[in-house]
Image (cartoon, rainbow, N blue to C red):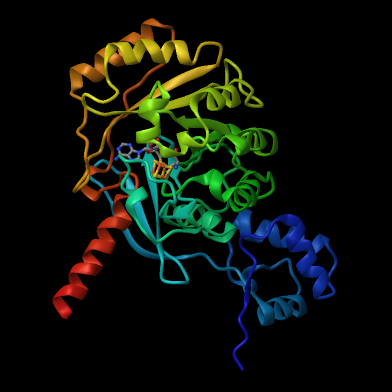
Length: 363
Ligand code: SAH
Ligand code: SF4
C-alpha cells in the first residue's frame, strides 16, 4: 500500500513538536529537525546525522522534507533570476530574485492568481485562484537558496538572498494565516533566520489585517496606493470600495513598529494621463502627512490587452522631484529582468498562454 508521506516543511515549531509527540518522540527532537531542515538545508533524513537511526527510519516511514519542484529557471542578462514553481496540484507560482551588488531580494508569491481585480495588473486577470500553503511559500525561498548554494544558513551576514518582498502573485493579507506561518518559519533565529527588518509585505489595502500583520509579524509594510482619491482608486484598486483611503491611511498611521527609521513604503504605479499629474504628486504629499513614509514609483509594465500606458520619463521624474522636494525618498523603480519577463504576474501568464497555444494546435 502506498502511504502518503506528510511534509514537514511548512509546519510551525509547535506543529512539528506535536507531530513528534504523535510518534512518541520527545519535543526536543523538533529542535534538531528544525536545524537540519532550515539551517542545514538537508531534505534527506539519512543526512541528519545527529538523529539516531531508529528515529530516522520512523521518520522515513511517515514523513518527507519536500520542496516544490522547479518547472523552469531562467536568468536574465541583468542577473535577475526567475523560477516557475510547479505545485503538487499542477498549478504554478512564480518567484523572482533581484540581485544587487553583494545582496538581493527574493520576490515571493502568496497565491496562485489573485481574487482582486486591479485594472492595471495582469495577475488580477487570471481566473484560477488558490492560496499557497505555508510549505509552498517557504519552499520558494528554499528553492532560491538551493539555486544560490546558500546552505547552511550563512552566519556571518554575507548572504546573496538578504531580503524578502511579498510582492509576487497574490494578495498576502488575503492568505494571512499561511503567510504568517511561513514568515515566522523564515524569521526563526535557529533556521533561515532572516530578520523582520529584511522582510516587506506588500498589500493592496486589506485594512482589517494590517494592524495584526504589524503586531504579530513586525515586518515592513508596503501599500499599493496608486491613486490619491477614492474615485480613481475605486477603479484602479477595486478593494478600495470596501476599504476606502481614509481607513487605509488611518491603518498606516497606526501601523505597529513604523517609525522614521522604518517607514511605510507607498507604491505608486505610473499610468500615463491617469494618476501622474503634478497635482496628483502634491495631493500625495498631503495624503501621507504624519505617516513615516517613503515612495516607490513603479513605471507601468504593459501586458497584452492592458488598458493603460506607462507615463513618460520626464513626467515620472517631475513627479518624483515633487515628492523629494516634500522631504520624502521617491526612487523610480528600474525595470529588471525584462528579457525573461520577471515582472509581476507575467511569468505564469506566459506559460499558461504557451499551454493554451499547444492545446489549440494539438486539437
Ligand atoms: N497584491 C499585493 C502584492 C503583489 S503586486 C499588492 O497589490 O500590493 C506587487 C506590486 O506590483 C503592487 O504594487 C502592484 O500594484 C504592482 N503591479 C501590478 N501590476 C503591475 C504592472 N503591470 N506594472 C507595474 N506594477 C504593477
Ligand atoms: Fe492582486 Fe496585487 Fe495584482 Fe491587485 S496588484 S490584482 S492585489 S496581485
